[in-house]
Image 1 (tube, rainbow, N blue to C red):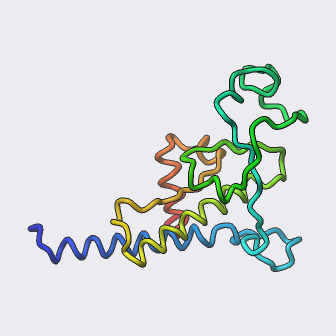
Image 2: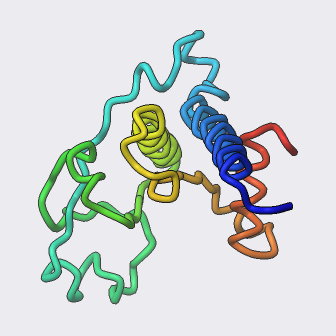
Image 3: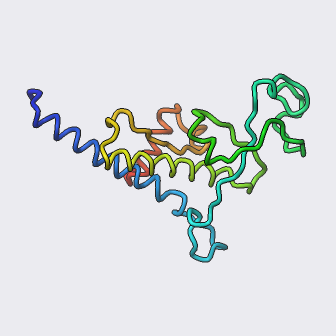
Length: 168
């Protein structure tokens, strides 16, 4: 098929429609399996972004609570190092983050809500056409168990996108 303007517009339009459908699915994700104890309320309506500990380079040099400490990975009570900041304020400034916490402390919900926030921002940019499609942030929420079961990280991400779009 020859590369014509009409063909390019059609492909880009279909891509934008598919991308919008995926981003909409990410926005709905935190509310899909709401716990029964919420009695019909949605986690996204109740979620309050937490404060996080922002480590400075000097906070990662060793000693108690550092990756070089033999207790690393335990959930022993330790005084947090670094300074406390709002996740809502810090998130736009980070490209990677490690979320640590004991079971039930909201790590999964924080990750889902962060993906939701990124998806909502991308939807605004898509609708306003303020960024080219290739520059839109596309969040992918992966559970570590899904990554461990998949043959590769790419396969896990592709499976998650298919699941979000209902193409299981």
